[in-house]
Image (cartoon, rainbow, N blue to C red; front, side, top):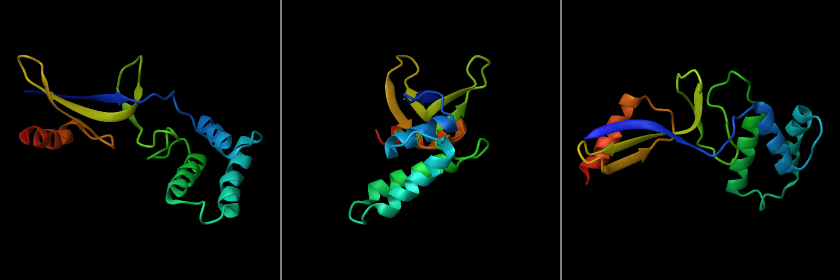
Length: 142
């Protein structure tokens, strides 16, 4: 068997903090003074919405918005996309494309016929050697 890991790219553009702040403003409706207004809007929405409307799903969204608003350039565990919360920045080490944004994926295939016998997607940017245990366990179940 041959095991390889790759990046399962997500359909997002190169994320910038300002771009995420503008998206948050679009969701909470406003378009002026990006940093100042976008900080106030989620707090205002949270304060004015009745508890019955603030369901668990909306709480997660508001928490993600606040994290995107308040993150700094060099922070770890950043929010790279509002609609794809599981997106990680994965270093490629190539001159033409330094990073990819998506999820780490591992694929297991037969050596001679290249038939895929297992595949697994990871939520974090795992080291390639650490993905072997999970993928081999999946193949052993077959």
